[in-house]
Amino acid sequence: MPAREASGARRRRLVPLVAAIVVAVAGGGLLTALHHTQRLLVPPRAAINAALHAPQSARVLAGAHWDRVTVTPIDDQLEHVSFLEHGQLVAEAAIYRNGQVASEKVDTMPVPYGNWVAYEPAVLVGLCLLFVLMAAVTPWWRLRNLDVIAALSFLPAVLLFQNRYLSASMLAAAPPMVYLLLRCGFVAFGPDRPSAAARPLLVALTPRLDPVRRVRWLRWLLAVVALVFVMVGVGSPNAVDVLYAAMEGATKLIHGVLPYGHLPPGVIHGDTYPILTYVLYTPVALISPVSTTWDSVNGGLALAVVGALVAAAAVFRTVSGRRLPGSRRPVEVEEAGLRAALAWLAFPPLLITVSTGTTDPLLAAMLAAAILLWRRPAFGTGMLAIAGWFKFAPLVLLPVALAPLRGRQLLRALMALALVSLPLLALLVALGGASGPADMVHSMSYQFTRGSVQSVWGALGIPGAQPFGQSCVLGLIAGSALVLRREPHLAADRTRMAALCAAILIGIQLSADYWAFLYLAWVMPLIACSVLSAAEAAEPAADPAAVAAGRLKPVGALAG
Image (cartoon, rainbow, N blue to C red):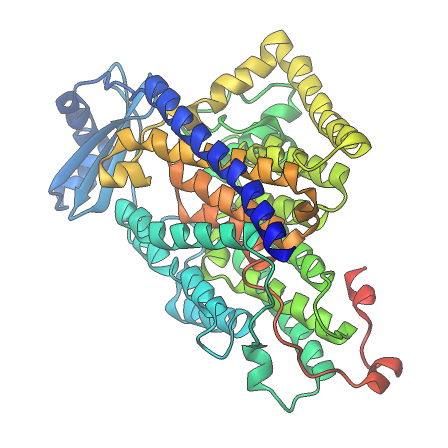
């Protein structure tokens, strides 16, 4: 009987695999047929001459060395000219189709964007050590430690980006991204097998420490790390242009104007985000409106800090609410949640990301909350809808969220989608008329047609292969949805679903036209809830008398 059941299980998994391959092949052909590279409107020589004669770049390039110039299309109106020395970006400019300079940029700051403190070697080393302490296990040859190494392998990509080696940064990040995609896919759909015996590294290094006291120390450590994020993030001297775009768009909304087509030219294509991006920044814009890149965006920087901390809380709740094998006491469950939350905050690129003020930490909070609410489909689907109206990418997770649902659950999830979407559509129509939604879609389409060397395809010089990479992601989504439709019980496991969502989002990033290390913030909370917090062997139990005497609050007291 067990052999027959195993054979049936293999057949059930074979159908989704075949479906995924069919979707990938068919999608690859279709996307290849539809794929087109933006044509250069200004001859390269004319674009380079215009950039050379722009005042700021002319001054810098006169005393700089550069051995390569690239000209790439931005859209049907703009081209991008980059001056490089041995692959390092020296200066860049955007040129209109009539040959005029739209903008120019020379990197004179010590870091591309963000707070220079977050890039300091001592800070990065400290975060790496804390990350290893929270996420690694003993014995050392456990697969979990390879996952930890893969997560830390993004640090070279960050350092290359800091020194403006943009293509090299993308290529350095690609191997760990591919590894984590495959690893998360295995966690999502791998067989149920007992976890190999392992102990958290923190527990192994403090074997004689009372678990009650260890949890107290972790609480204090979490508070200290949160304070560091506030100090480094709020008031950062070099915010990213995405934050200015969000704040400028929010300021337009306050004045009853949609941002699409109406933002000032200081940030090119600052109107390429869904409407909720600008809506969420309106409370901050009411206090400190932004109309130029000279205005203060400290309120937006504070929102990035809040996003990272809310994501940490969601990771804690997800892991500490998990049913772990063996006789686990509240103190042990809480400790697992605290380690996972600290691992997320200690991920070295995160502090830099938060200090830039980008919207990605807020998206991380939304995705972490969606995983926390996954077992309540209406709330989980509604949160994914919110994330999708904030940034487009999370909408690709809706098929796997809806696939296992039936009957009333499916109806409630669809109602949640409508409750989130209808008010935003109404806002678009109210401010932009019947063309408001179309204006938003048109502005967002830039993300799917932009040219850039900051992608695997651009860095390797194989843009023609990009449609096949995108079709593989479509195949992954289709196959995953079919598996969950046929085996809905898998969707009840938040560890599996966090890993699956992380795999899909990594695939989206690998197949996209543009990538920066800031986008890692989308997936790391999900990885912290899955591959970096899988069940270990039972740890030393807490003293029941200590818990009963009130020396440690139960999990619910902290989580609530």
